[in-house]
Length: 82
Image (cartoon, rainbow, N blue to C red; front, side, top):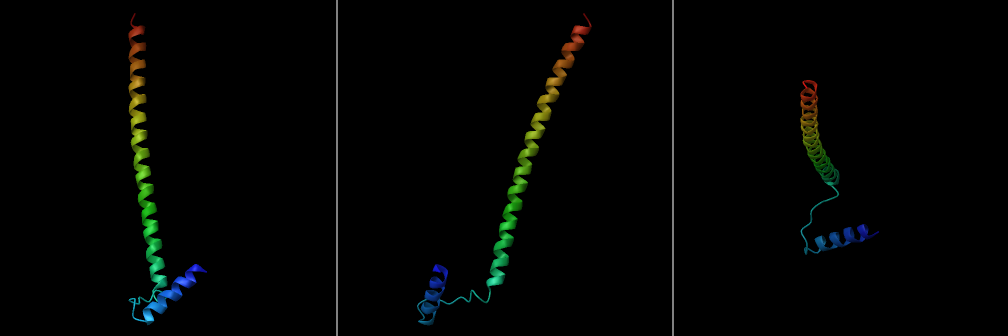
């Protein structure tokens, strides 16, 4: 209901030359398409950022576990030579 009142006031102000009229209804589909495409692009960017963060986390975990494995391997090697 409030949207209808706002639209009505907008048209009344435009007819009285108190406000510059921009035909939203005629370009409503285009505006909706632009907004939706921007939302989708924003979603893709956030997903790519999350993926990059996960990749860095995974690389850090692999490096840590590799170093841990090498330390254990070196310890076993040192114990086997005794």
